[in-house]
Structures are given as C-alpha cells and as structure tokens.
Length: 358
Image (tube, rainbow, N blue to C red; front, side, top):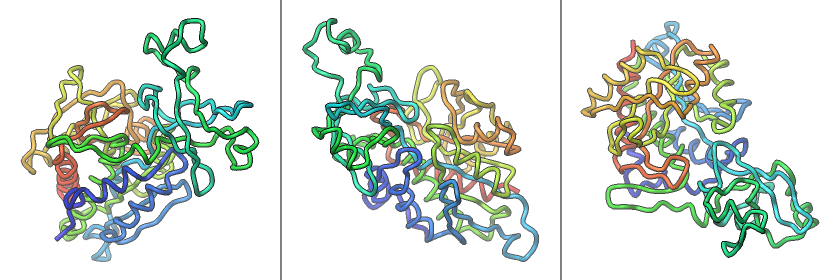
C-alpha cells in the first residue's frame, strides 16, 4: 500500500511550501523531495545540473532484457523569486524578477535574503502610498502599475554590513517563510508557490503508485525534479539530453481562465500546446484515456501564454515526444488555489498513463 502524500494533513505539501527554492538555489526543496523519493524508487541521485532524479525500472529491466526507452516525468523544484541587481549606499536593495514575476505577484511583503546557508530579513517595498507624481515611483504606485524600477528591499543594514554578509548582485531574495504557510479555504488549498509544489507532490505520489504496480510497467519511469525551470528550462534540457527517454511529460499547474475554458476542479488539464511547442497528439490522447480510466473528466486546453519543461525540450529537438498534464489552479504566479483532491487526481492519472504505455 503506497502512502498518500496528500493525506494526513498534507504534510509533504506543507513542508514543500515552507522550503525556499529560487532558481539555482533549490536545495531546501530538493531535500524534502529526496526523503520521499527514496522510499519508492530503485535509484535516486542528483545530476550535475542539480536535477533530482528517481527511477522505477520497468519489468523488462527486471527480467534482464534490454529495456525500451524510458519516460521522463518532470516537475520543477524552483519558484518565482527576485534577484539583487545592486546594493544602494544606504543599504536598500534594488531587485528584479527571477522567473516570470511582476511586483504585484508578491505585493508589499516580508522577504528572506538568502546568503550562504542562512538568510537575512527584509521588506519588499513600493514606497509610501501617500505620494504624488513628484515622487519617482508615485505615478506607477498610484495607478497600480508598479514596475520593478519602483521596487526596493528595506534591510535596515548598511551597505558594508550587507557586503560582509555576502549580499551582492545575483543574491536571491524570496518570499519569507513568515508568509508561506498554506491557507485552507473549505475544499481548497491556497498558498504562494503551489507552482510547482503541488505538481511535485503529484509526481512523488505517482512514483509511489507506479512502484506498487511495478510488474505492469514496460518502461523505465524517470521522475525528474528539475532546476531553473522558471528562468531557462536549463535543468530539463540537461536531463532530457542525458537520460535514455523518447517521451517527456511535464507536470504543471494549469491556469483557470475563461480564455482557456478551464475550470477549478480536480479534473486534470491536458495541454495541447503552449508558447514554445504543440505537444505530441498521441501523448495527449494517452493522457486523456488514463484520466478517464481513473474516473475523471479531463480538460483540454491550448495554453498560449504558458511554457513548460516538456515544451522546451520538444521545441529544441532533444526529445521525440512530449505532453503536459496540469493541476487546475486559480491565480497562477500569485496567491494560488487548487482543490484538495486535485493532486491525487493528477498522480493517479500519471501512474495509469505510465503503466498503460507499451
């Protein structure tokens, strides 16, 4: 019997939401995933790019025959964040987006400035609201169109103190753990960074399900938790180039929008394409059948203002086929919300897809 990771108070999801993981500095998230992945996979390792990988070998591999090419199931470790552009003489920090973030995604909030193995506290600020257009950021703040040039981080430390702590251009700044705890809203869960923590939990749960049905698995299944998806898909590109697989499946959050005719439900979204590639039709249809086999009503969507690890590797010609399954999510890249059963629905669909694939 596998452990349902979304049960028992959503322990793993809660741990992952508290873990800080800006692109290139995902060690806290990777550590939580590693502890769960080793329970179910035949082998677990971290590759030179920082991707965490666990493999469940298919029946052909166990029988001693040459295994057919595997399947990569990818969820990303990183989150949208900020990076220091410069340190001002008065000790305030000028920051820009790390990943697809606008200032409104964070708001005025507490932040953690990541230095070495610790962090410094700060406050993300747009300046006072009691301003006129005479103030540099006044017009943007008053109209609500705040841009990164209007944003700074108050540290209450001198520039020399910050330098001694190791703060410099390139230092990561993230939403503080003070504001990371999830909020339960009746049948839903809301939090920052459900992108991509909810899909990560779905992949961990799918690994447990697949391991429990290993005798039905005809391919090696690689569960790949990638680095730097929000910035460049660099981790996914490296993994797809170095692992033996012809199919890549991205597990993502999917925007709930009238534009895409998607709804907030437990029924998985199957993306047919995004801004980087149109997904392989056969893979989308196989995911659809797997979802229906599990009793769900999958939602097809063409997500034009979107991208994933799978579309990145497909558009680069690194992998022959690709697909994307997504958990329906309100407020993507903001204070996100999913239904409580959506993670398990995605996990069950994924595991069914993997064991059905011949």
